[in-house]
Amino acid sequence: MGALTDPRGYWDDLTATEQWVTAAIGLIVLGLVLLLLTGILSPSYFLFLFGLAGMYALLSFGLNSQWGFTGLINFSVAAFFGLGAYGAALMTGSNSPIAGGYDPVFGVVVALVLAAVVAVAIGIPTLRLRTDYLAIATLGLAEVVRLIVRHESQWTNGSAGIRGIPTFFASWPVLGTFPDVMPGLEIELVPGSPIVLGYSFWQQSLNVALLLVFLGGSFAVLRRAQRSPWGRLLRTIRSDEDLAKALGKNTYSYKMQAFVLGSLIMALAGVFYAHLNLFVDPGRLDPITTFYVWVAVILGGSGSNRGALLGGFVVVAIREGSRALNDVSWLPIEGAPIRLLAIGLLIILVMRFRPQGILPPQRELIWPSAVDDAAPSRPDRGVREAKGGGSDD
View 1 (cartoon, rainbow, N blue to C red):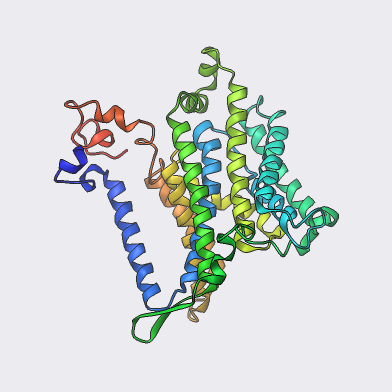
View 2: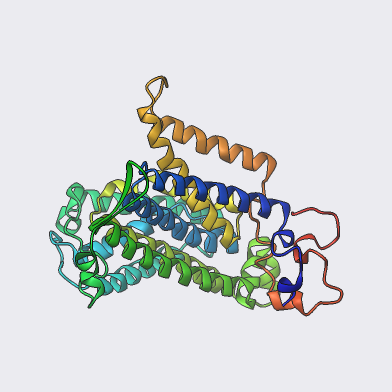
């Protein structure tokens, strides 16, 4: 009710950083709209990129629940992503050496169960030890999974990968035939630059709908968990595990729960990728995938769900946006080295000028009703600038 009567609206209720991020996102959206209207960017390709960005956001959610909430160093993001992708692909792919032909929903269940079992197996011997042992164990796990997927062709089809993966809604009524029955449209808002909406566009629209369900569900669960007593205890473990033990808490059990939760979300991202790309191979299990996800979490702000979401989209924007540099003839190097250079430079700048990340979790830790009920002593600009200093830290 206060937001409706406040003449400043929502904008003045944001911190300076949140205003800057909102303005930047607005400019990017405006630029994308212009690219779509002029026909430079295909609508179906844009939806594919959106799905790829959402996949990295899901991976960032998973790592954020482990590192951002609990302080668990996990260097096997690519491994759990691969377990999810291959779990779904082996159950549904046409050239699967194990099964194939099952409903994608069954593939989701198999992928999540596989990720949970592996997470528990790696967590049992390591979570009672210091964090650096977990880092070493997960680093080894990532390499073990990659090598198994690449070389055990009787289980995974080896380097040839799994093909013939159906779309997620292929066997569903109505949705399964949705792209086929939708008409092809050609819209020309700008003369000479028609926008074609065909089969691939409608298919990518279903992928985006599935992504939004996965993202929305994961975000809601993590948001609820972060503000709950369970989440507060996880932050205590991250800050001072000995204190949590002194309070009589079984920190091993809570760390295991956080580790498994994050692994399940990473596997969910793998499931989505399998049905987005319709093909999986060992190349996606390279350590660079883990590196990109760590960059996303650090960039957005450790412990911040909003930050993890933002970081995932920023990483994909840099990755895919730099591909256009390959067409610039006067550049002395190709786009791939520039991509890594840009991400490395971005991390340096963030750690130097904004070590807490772009969107730290200050507002996410408090129930909105706790602020609303504080009136008339409620700060003029909410919980973000509680002591009148104008700082958004």
